[in-house]
Length: 336
Image 1 (tube, rainbow, N blue to C red):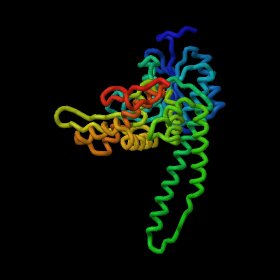
Image 2 (image 1 turned 60 degrees about the horizontal axis):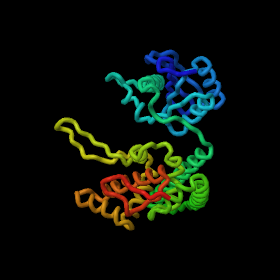
Image 3 (image 1 turned 45 degrees about the vertical axis):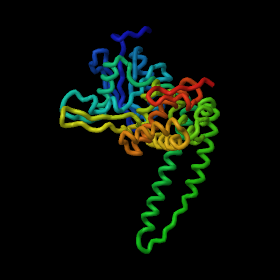
Image 4 (image 1 turned 135 degrees about the horizontal axis):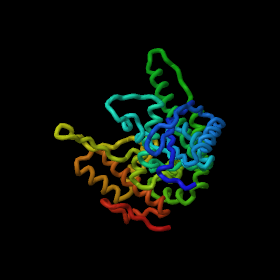
């Protein structure tokens, strides 16, 4: 059936761990139905097929909330319905509210998502797609990050306990070390198999090791989710934010830090190595210092530039050439 904007029915879903709230609206934003559905594969599959039978021109929108949205998105995708996965920042209560009264309920959020989807005529967020190998790789990378966080937290707690009088407690974290090493090896192997050319491009850059390259590609699914370098930088939290209003509010531009902290930390570490070994990036770093920027801010500038280069090289399947990187223009690469 040919879809027109006047015939499309929009389903907005507020994602929860165990239950999803949903709202159906027509092309004018009028509410047709509302309800809740349990986050179970069989229940979601039945729910998707039932709605599609009644509304053949259905379009679904949901937030990218952890991994809880994946079952719902997969159920509708397998039923032949296009699913738009939306950045929660665009569908937050603050972004969607239409009055000064702040109401925060799952039903209210579902309404807001449905109306946002209708307002944009479905052109918001990214279209959900499922690749089991890529999803497994991404889940492995996230579990690896979780284990590293737990190991660091345990070391801090043990150190705090050991500082107390009469405390001789000693905890061996070798079990974490062994599992982390095993997962790192497996992640590098699987990433090299799935994204062979991208791994070659990244690891050829001096300052980028196999661990960093594997984590970056696994978490971002080889940057397929990001149509532009700006979108990639925003995901990393390297994009600038600025607050200005009249003459009383005139804040400094700061890094948003709204994205993945693990990938941002890795890219910042790579930036420090690039400043050490690459004349072009060292010049960029020194220029930032000469303008009065703090070292941390200067490294952030280098990391932002490096993110642009990584996106261009991976997207265009081109090798990085440090001699052709401009300080004020986009990076140049050489075709492999």
